[in-house]
Amino acid sequence: MLADLAGKRALITGSSTGIGAAVALELGRLGVAVAVHGNKNAEAAKAVADRIVAAGGKAGVVVGDVAKRGAAKQIVDAAVAGLGGLDILINNAGAILERVTNAGFDDDMYDQVYDLNVRSVLAVTKAAYPHLKAAGGGSIINTGSVAGRFGGFAGSTVYASAKAAVHSISRNAAREFAADHIRVNVVAPGFIITPFHDKTPQAVRDSAAAQIPMKRLGTAEDCVGAYVFLASSAMSGYITGQIIDVNGGQLMP
Image 1: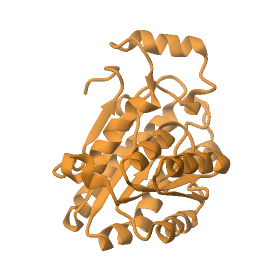
Image 2: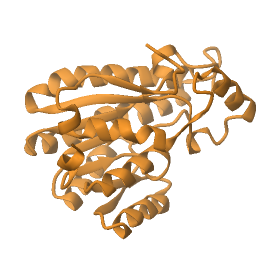
Image 3: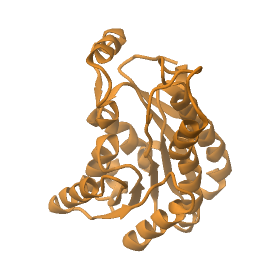
């Protein structure tokens, strides 16, 4: 049923490493032309695109900081120019940036987290919407987080609230864009071992794994299937406004 993805065109923000890179590689394998996005990791983004092309797929690279005002349109326009249109948008760029308590955050840190994790989703989606509509519809998949579902652990208050905002934005957009045959859904990963957690202490990793029914932390590849499912209209054409949790049972809403 995934044959419907062949020939589609996708922009994946934050796809130079981690979950975004894993999704880009799999969509490329399935015949999707992929715009691999990077910012500080432009070389890593190129490496992902090169792997897709080497395997017989189609891919290009777009570079820019989604957190900066005005950058979203430039990124989308570059992707559309390279792909010839857009059918799938995956808003995956995001980061915790730093761990702070409710009593210890400051305004600059708050702005940075929200610009990267929230404003970028709104801005990239706004820029991509006309192209998705022109294609006759498509799929928007936003990367949420288990932290946005339950509030997050100590030190993640700002990030968790930002991801909760992404969940809410996605539901609202799902209602708004349904008439244009554009579906909007969320994948909410749990504790996934990617560069996101490079600075997470081993003790915290071990403690998290012990609380997960499957008794292990997730991988980027564990998340890929949910994105592919939501990208395919044959698989999920009557699904919109939903959150798919990929967390090994850590949270069962």
